Image (cartoon, rainbow, N blue to C red; front, side, top):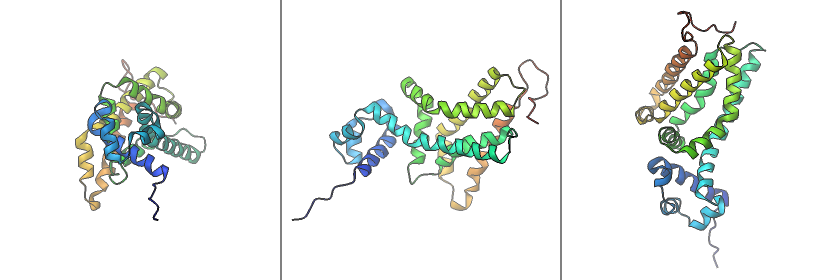
Amino acid sequence: MTLRSVKPQHETRRRILDAAEELFMQHGFEGASMRQLTGKAGVNLAAVNYHFGSKDALIEAVFQRRLDPINAARIATLERLEKEADGEPLPPEAIIRAFIGESLAMIEDGRNGGRNFVRLLGRTYTEPAKPIRTLIGRMYAATMERFKAAFARSLPDLPSGELFWRMHFMFGTLSYTLAATDTVQLIAGFKPEDRHDSRALQERLVQFLNAGLLAPLPGASSSSVRKAA
């Protein structure tokens, strides 16, 4: 008697997450049905309920799977740079690179679903799904505080309220860049020998965001915000 092949539980969970990520990206959180999900993942509804319990928990797991390692990598990069700086404040440009590099790298990841997730994240930023945006805000909270502290040390002359607004504009710009389908399609269409163009996008974005952080204060003279010495 031959035994029926049973897929490992972690493999079933991964297939459900992969299917949910793609369907949420294509149809939105409300538009993607559980029937579509089970069909695409090749599982039954009981398997989805076993692994996640509810659609809300599944949505949270989709974001947690990607954002937790991204944010951990961002903080690890920032801590490495600060250690190399030996106690000196980092230039704002270095802090920007530490934050945006992980996100932009995902645009090129078509094999492991990174590109789908980037487009899903962009859709979340541009659609009125307050519970989802609240969830993402909670997942980002610790990372935002860590980077805010680094920017505050880097730009000691910038008032805390102004720093809040400039970070808001900075991350909004990154969100739009990730949400823009033409950006994703542009990078996804590069030939291997032209991959340096994706790094060129990062350089353009870094320089643009850095200029915004160093712009003159409202009502101040034309001199920009002083960088840390």
